[in-house]
Image (cartoon, rainbow, N blue to C red; front, top):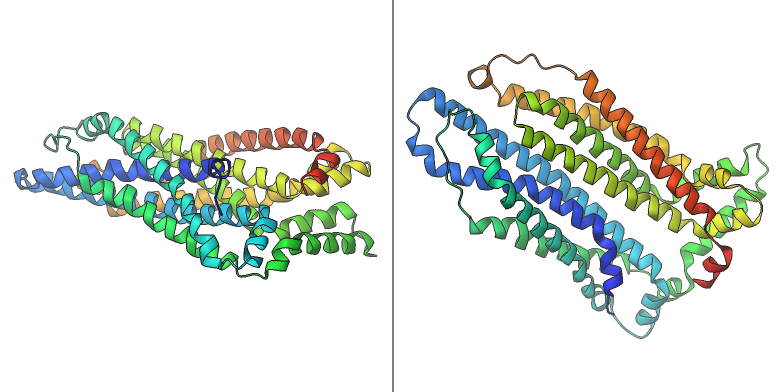
Length: 385
């Protein structure tokens, strides 16, 4: 089986996420590597305190940013592979019926690792373009000696080559796991049959709840991963945007702008991927609802509005996570000897700014995709089968 370029082009979300993960990691890891070369030049205890705090905070930032985004990239990769298998069930079932093993089919999924390679290269390139200005900002206080910028080849190994290999292996192994289904089930599209039966049961059920309420709940239950993705989109936005507005007092403007950019990129990308998958996964349901006279607003309410609580919960968790993380970092690494006394508390203006902007962005997404619902044609949907 050959995965077409068209299928690989849909992995834009992973490319952006990997770029966002590698960018801060490359900046801080390369900086720490270069700073290690001037450690022997530091003789004053006060300067050594600043040096150790800078190195420790850089390591923590790189570990948190890189680790969290790496885990999310795995989730996104699994989502894309599952989506690929769901949309190519018949072809995969025919291959299994012809005698192809699960591994023989899944080994071509290594191509999905190329999206990780592409994103890592982009993030690495942007980091090195920013590095001269980043080094200048970090040394602007004049406490630490000037650190010459050097290219450390091991960064390529740790941030590009190893992640690409690891994610390619994850893709193959997960593909093998998801293909452990009878060939006939794949060919017939057993999941689609289950969905139609559950909808039929919901329509004929003699309960007091309205059909749209039942459909909203069944849509959420059938796709829990999408609930997680939408919640995580708001989590990333709340966390990084509020952190960027708060961190300006403790770090440089460049760091604040970088965090703001990462927050916007992650939040919008994950939100786009999740809502697109919601619409595409329910296009037959939407088309049938339109045929039976349901309005554009009613279709959107049944298919899209059920995800609003997930977005609200994700934003709340992101806000709490950001506050807890900043509080911990300030108490552990930003001591009075380094930056003086800091009375850190919850930043209400930053919270309100992030909340209002996210609400506006989320509402724009809902409006755009509500209009897209109106353009779904039953004829086009049936021709896809």
